Length: 304
Image (cartoon, rainbow, N blue to C red; front, side):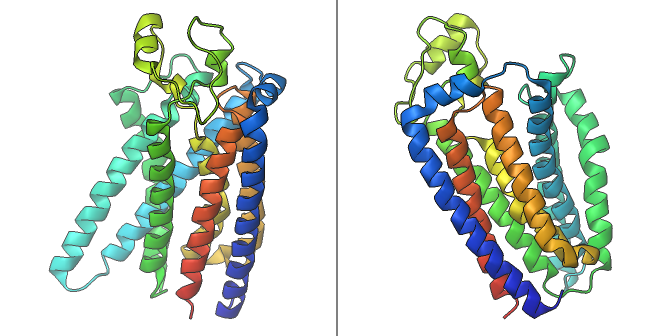
């Protein structure tokens, strides 16, 4: 793909990302008034197919993190002079390892593999195994491809996509922390004191309820949907792989639409599982759409 075509693709991706943001805002407005009704209509507790798709939503996002960190390390090792190379390489390696270990924990969580296989737990031994078996090999692949690259802008492009992914992650986690909301799967159990809460009416006695009924704190992290944000971010994460893997440069549009379909599949799976309401997935999708638009806009400037 020539630089001119790359810029054209970025313009196309920006337009679609902005359109998606508008669609998610409209869905958010609908969810604000009809969250409970929609949740009741689509809920299917323990739906295995939905659990698999939901888990893939985490794996693709975290796997991309690992791949990009591996590629970033390959670029850090090319930095001159030597003291700066050592500093950059050390920082990237430490951050990458921390992210991959955290990714292992996310993959083993009750919302992902833990929900499919009862024997899977988010403990240190299993997180270590996941790190070495699942994510480290992906980082090695990213390192190999990054080392072969001759693109002088590759380091900046990798930092850009990683920054957008991190900012998106921090945005929805910050909202989750400040606006606790019971998931529909918890509301549906008809536990005394735990009813439906609109997104603008966060529950106030979360800690008391967790202690009284021995509940999982994660069941109060409905708003917004992190899985949906991670899934929709695939419209930037997947085409972004072409920066590291030259063979994908002619397939960026295809990767964009694959990411789009995948993101909506993850969105649907979260609602089917009763993990999120319509307004939850709408906000998650909105955050990812905006982050993707920013990524493409910033990357476009690197080609001018």
